Length: 603
Image (cartoon, rainbow, N blue to C red; front, top):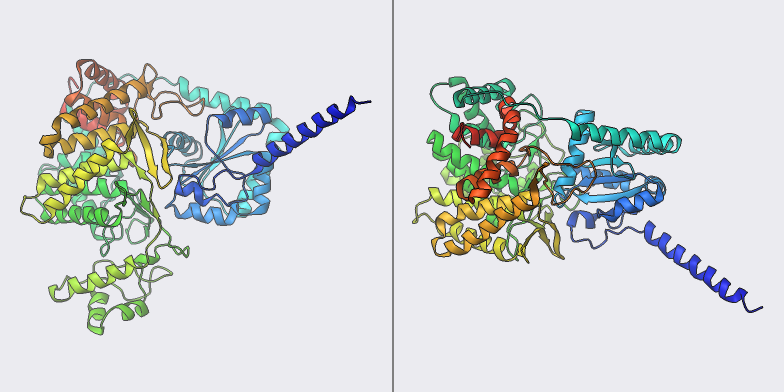
């Protein structure tokens, strides 16, 4: 008679363990996550998990597909979809019951995000953030979408749930077959092309895509496209008037219209219109670094001091507006303010102008910054250059408006990303190349660069590895190829100005280069992350530039300059793998094109 009691106890214990496991599985695991973006989703009713190697194991054990949503802190539509969909009990119930819901910060998992972004872009024509992709339990993409209103998103979820119930095996087979077909595609052979012919093709492709009336590329949204322009600027000359005129128009419209914050400094991530009067108001650290480098290069090429001032103004903003108190620079400033108003700190009403300025200053500001007529935004006017500056009023009026904007700041994503800080170090080093030592900016930039170099070498680098980012709660993510490469490039650029620390810098640069080759390149090609997160993520013959420079091309170029004999051999081999794609589409591979133009016969 005593036997049933232990048996009953074991049943109760098993049931208790099952209930605990079920409760944990349904819990949102993002609260207090080191990523500020993921922590924002910590109170969603969706049972989010962060990405880990165990996700595929859980999915395969349960037989459920994975719903992977990628976004970032400063993304406006990511916040909108959170409010509309991920806080909806109905949608949360669908996701929790039928999927393994995973949230990633694209800035901490760039290789995984780019793989899924490429899948959606190739199969559906366009993609953006938030990026939402459905994967088989084995990790092969099924379908994906960007932002969708809650009703449409709910309908999509129900359709996928029904389809998976009816024909899971066939859906999984087709997804695996599609991924395999991408891996098995073979690179084309490289046609012969001289340096002059490659240069001509590069310029021709740019002009075919160019908007010759408004500047930039295409007829829609305007993105900075710094890698392309950085490679095109040195090709400008008197022999191609149409190309020169378009390039100058692009530089002037990008700096002179709504892509740039004229009062507070810095560049917005992009504009939604070709007129460049409607910015998407987020500010990214990498944009500030790359735009500063671009305008410094353009100032040299065109002997245009105004371009140099644009670069300095941009760097001043980064130093004053994005510096982190514990070292390094924050990743981004959100597009929305604390009250969920897009661009509110940068927009003005007449009432706000009257409360901040004297009547004379207000009259000047209205003319100077085109603050009249119907406002283009719900929150007011965006200051855009109108009348010429008047020295009597410019400094005081601009200072008052900028101070008012700083009093109503947009939230910062305070994680410090290794790669982006490396890019800023390169920009500061380029600026120091152009400044006289008696210029007041010279010691400011030099001190900032010195501190940033020390931060990258001592804080970002731990136990022979780079962190992807540092957050308020500690390290987040492992360094990827771009982190090693852009930190190495930043330190190499700073090396020109840091002779006393030369030996120390050389050692760290060599370590970074060696690590990048050892862990991110092999017989299968380039691996942006040290390991493939999903089974379809195989090696690539080259990594494209967008919106950052190509990390693989940057590593090749840096290695050819200062690598060992063995590393230079690898660099030449990697360059040969990329040659065919580069020669066919130089505009879309600008960093590789630049290398071929510098050393066309024997890179």
